[in-house]
Length: 268
Image (cartoon, rainbow, N blue to C red; front, side):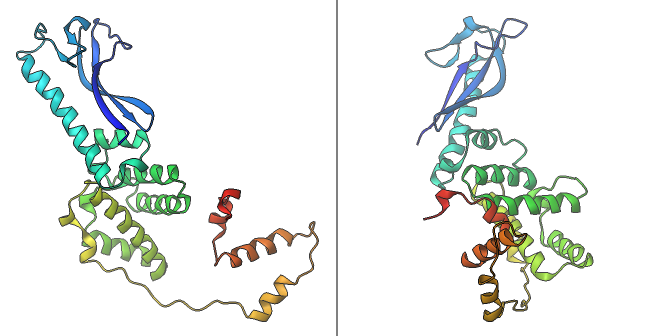
């Protein structure tokens, strides 16, 4: 595991009163960042070898209590890191997302903030298509909530049912709703695995995602042959369009948005 946490005095950032902030130095995947602990002391009161406040410090009633508090914060950070490692998530996280997990920045309760963290992780892992679908549902939920945040605990059977009614009232279909609900469920499941929300609150045991049969829209083979055999010069307006269509067809119907992100390394 290439991740560690060290408590230190940040002597690079001297405060106006001459003290320095105590921080946790987070190292992950060859990069470092700092997490302030909201405490600052004079340099003479810091034991750099023991990584703790010296007994000479007079800013609190009990230096032992202060050091125990600092140690507790570090232990909690390591507990989060070890759980992420055991769940196979740690190695996929950029250091900024790991820092957010440790500080629990807005994500402990906020479904939307947690989803945004997931989006950053997906982009870092080059899973652009999934990241785009996450962004899509977050945009829809923000619109539905009129810009208000959405907490994990608010995603209940009742919430999902009302969201379904809202979706259908706008003339949208069942299968479109199913895509949204599966995306919400996917993010929620990630939240459970990451310890952001309790399993007992899971709403999809009661709410069932519905789908409807879709009308087959397959092209007639003869019509497809005509498209393939079209004699188009490179300067023809339909030249690229035809080729994009055929490329999509040959790749089992890959949508254009995913095709746009293909690179040469994607071709085996």
